[in-house]
Image 1 (cartoon, rainbow, N blue to C red):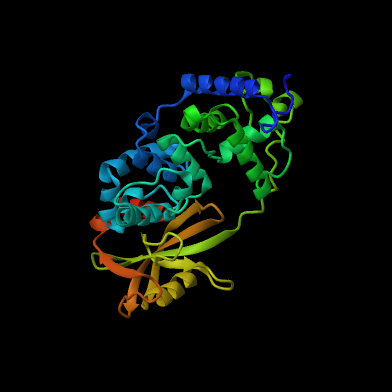
Image 2 (cartoon, rainbow, N blue to C red):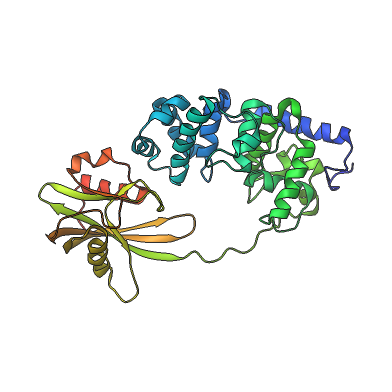
Length: 372
């Protein structure tokens, strides 16, 4: 096979596939980053790591993984834990449905499987929060099953390798890529192969400025040979990210502050927050604060000042959180449209799991932040 010729995995000869495998695995053996779940690939640890790594970078995950394993060292510990404790350990990592699914899945594994984790990818896909990629990653890394694990890094490596100039977000293209990976994965080191492709995408075949000269697969790469690395993978142009304004209220009653817990079926479900909500057309953000508190917890408040504004980005929208100091005027706080409400002494607020934006409010309160 000449340099730059298409590596159509279903048709390439076996000797060429063997060379490609060897080159990739040799590179991985030399350049693999140390990771606690990689250095000690116990099934439980691999499962936790793969869930944490969804939408999150390795460097961010590392300390959270260590704390999580220390607090819940086995599936039985996770299953028996209170969800609030799990969310507290997860606090700040984001995408909290992952933590809720882990907790739910651990209970299922204990109840229905006697505490024994699945071994094959098809069984892993029945576990809450596990899709095709995570199922393949866990089954191959922890149990050696020769099944593909196709994440964003793998898509980038293989679309460039094959010179695929079709929309890589389309299900048909993803299925085809999965087939190509399956054709070249090595049964003897399936987990290492999947990790090697991911590692190559993270360290060398990066979205911008890929380091093609140091890529072990360059001799087979169509995109490198034809100068297409900036055009592949192909994706549709992103739509503008919407922005919303949200009011959050620090409601004080003597030495106590009111917090509310989001319903389980809501985004960030199960987490506590300083109550408030989204600004509606035609109202000021201060009016939003008063209206939302009346609707959520059934009391009338008076806004006494503004602590500041916190910009925050989620995966599908951006928001500015406007934080107000407030006093209750009349009524008794109760859970009207929220899951629960509670008056808490400020020193005890850190005992409750909060979303990242609300943690910034906590820091303000601890530092006696005063709005300018």
